[in-house]
Length: 69
Image (cartoon, rainbow, N blue to C red; front, side, top):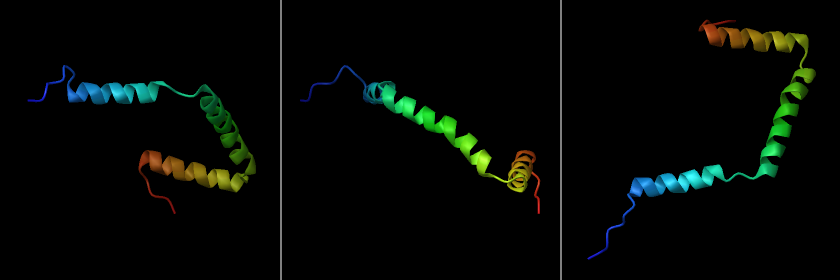
């Protein structure tokens, strides 16, 4: 007969996920953060005032649940 494990299957799954998500590459984190910091500003600089206004209108409509157009 098979020997029962002292660790529950759910506990094992939790420990595997916990290890996989806690061990992060600091270089990859820094690179991702750098791209994130540059991305929004670079996109905003490329938009015209009309494009920014349209994006803001859509965001407000979505936020308040109203249709525009």
